[in-house]
Length: 252
Image (cartoon, rainbow, N blue to C red; front, side, top):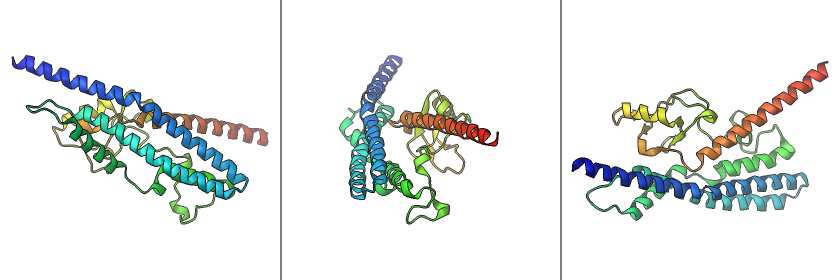
């Protein structure tokens, strides 16, 4: 009887996780559309800056901030859906999914909250515009040694898995910690967490965060950001190849 009850419990948990994953996947298209819109707005702003139409550039910057609010609301919503699916376990009392979902939305917002001007969307937009007339110069308010070239930098905290050593663009099943944002190969990190008997510290160097299976997942943006990193890596390799070829021709 106990084994039959456990089997039913496991079946319910699996269905909830599957439903949450499917719902999140179905809504990924909106995230992609928002990122495409942001990229288009950035490119238009660069063209306007070349024509010295500063007022129109500022209007676009304000629109990017507005778009950012929608983007974060949606990604927090998707992250909460997946977290509910991962954390759900049947109990003796009926689960209050509405309450659980609200708690996860609050947690997601707490993890992602930052001033809009510090968000990657806004910084990359402003840097792209700044570089039209000031390429290589620090942006106003930034010291030379503190410049962060986010326009050519990925949004990922780490670009190799701390455990397997594989580049994140080669991970078969990537997951990310909701606490510290470090990225891992799922099979490897889950084995690591289970081996620590509830006391798993993030294996990334100098990271003090604790890890739990329920909070290490493939969030809505992870595969998108990995794909962007993969595309950027290809572009960088192509640029370096062209530069090498040009130098060889000049020296020849």
